[in-house]
Image (tube, helix red, strand yellow):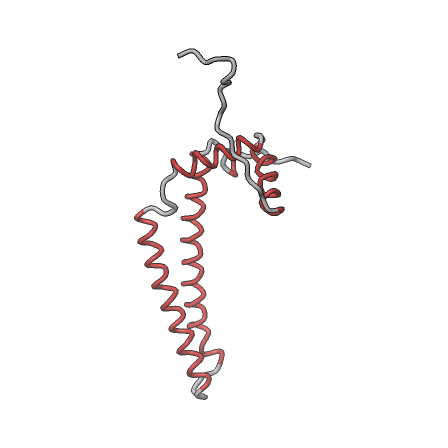
Amino acid sequence: MVRSAREPRRKPRLRTELSDADEARLQAAVVLFGVPKAEVVRRLIRASVQAGPALSAENTRAVVELAQQVRMVGRNLSQVLRAIHRGQAVRIEDTEPVWRGLHEVVAAINDELTEMTVAYGSKLRRQAGLPLPSEIPTEEA
């Protein structure tokens, strides 16, 4: 099919308004990835479609399990606070193992969530054709 001179081929365009904060983020992405704004947006669009859901089925199950652990920690803290209010609290030195245990559970939950989100962020970067943080050159002083 021959296109007439009157009907030039037009590519679809996107025009959008950004908040100052989003514009700053877009500029940061341009600098970080070394590509023009339009390319950043194109890559984000491609990555959002190709990357799939934010969490895999396995990660979803892990988040459900972590939420159960967080509720358990909350129940433990609630029991300790009730005991304090009833005047049944033991000396702070005697509670140290409880607080250490709670801290360890919270730290483990944090580590697992961090691992999931870092892995997903790396997946999105690969899908978008962007370098991983470890591959981004840093300026040396």
